[in-house]
Length: 465
Image (tube, rainbow, N blue to C red):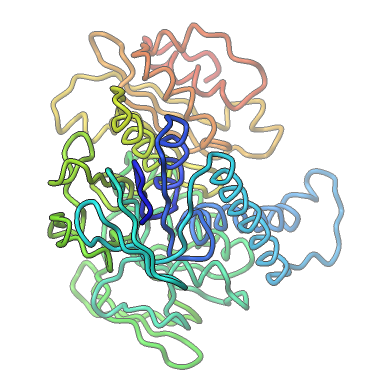
C-alpha cells in the first residue's frame, strides 16, 4: 500500500500548487486527478483557454476597427475560428504539460483516476487499475463545475456552458448570454468581437453585481459601444432548443413575459462546488446547503487532518485564491504559521478594457458606515491612452477619511489586470492614498492614472484634469 504525508485530490491551481509547496517542505506527496491532463478547470476549460481566445479575438477586432487609424492598411480581414481554437488548444496543452513537468521536478506522485475516501486516512483511486493510498493528511481541491437553474439546463448543443463556448465550430450570428458576470462577459466579448450579436439577460439590476457600482456603469457603456445589448432585471423561465435556434423566455421587471431568439444560449450563472464521488461521509466530512465543504479559519474540515481549498469552500471562486489556500495548508501541515488576507485578493474581468478591483467597494463602505474619501481619474486624460487609442475607463481610490489608509481600489482600464497589483502591494503594507500620490510613476504609462486618482483622493490634487 502507498503511504504519504499528504494526498491531494484535484490538480487545479489549488491542488497542484499545494502539491508543489508540500514537496518543497519535505512532505511525501501524492496528487490524484481523474482526467488525463493536469491543471483542472482553470488550465483546461477556464482561465487559460478563455484568455487565449480573448487575445485572438482582440487582435482581429483591432485589425478590423483600429489598424486603419494607426496607418496600417489591411484588406480582406476575416476570422478563422478553427485556427483560433487550434491555437487555444496548443496553449492549453503546453500549460498542462508544464504542470506535469513541475510534478516530476518536485517528485510528486501523480495518480490518474477518481479518488474517494475509504476512511479519513485511506483513499481509493479508481482508474485503469484500482489503488489504495494511506495518508496522514488530505487536501480536497476538486474545484467547481458550471451552475444552472431549472429551465436553463444545458444540452451542450445549442444551450451551452463555458466549456462548449471554448470549442465552438462556428461563429454565431447571435448569442444569448444568461448572466452578466465574469464568465458571460468574457466569452461574450470573444464572440462579440468576431461579429456575433451578444444579448445579455441578467437577473440583477447591473452587470458585475458584486463589484463597485462605478465599474459596472463604465463597463456597461463600453460594451454597449461594442454592440452588446443588456436586459437587466429579467428572470429566465426557460430556454428551449428549437433545432437551429434557441428560444429564451423570461419575465421582465414589470413581470411581463418576453422572449428572445438566437443561434445559441450561453448559460453563465456562476459555478458550484464539485464533490461528487468523494464519499465524504466515509471520512466524516459534510457539505453545507450550498454544496461547499465546511472549513474553519485554518481550512480544516470537521476532521482535523482533512483540509479543503479553492472553489469547493467558501469565498470567491478564483484560481489565485485557490493557490494561496493551497500554499497556506501546505505550510500549516509543515508546522509553519501562514496567513491569508482575503480582503486583498484582487478580482479581474478580462474584457477590454479590463476590470480589476481589490478591497472594499463604495457600497460596502456606505453600508458599514465608514467615513471615506474618494479619488478618481479618467483614463482618457492619459497621454499613453491617447497614444494607444485605449481611452475608456477610470481608476477609483477609496481611503479612510481620518487616516487616509487605502480601503479599496477599483479600475476599468487597459491592462487593469496588471495595474491592480500596485494597489494590492500598497494595501498589504497599509499605505495611504498620499503614499501612492508621492511615488514617482513613469510617463507616459497607464499606471499614472493610479497616482492621479490617489492625488484626487488627497485633497483633490489631481494634476491632469
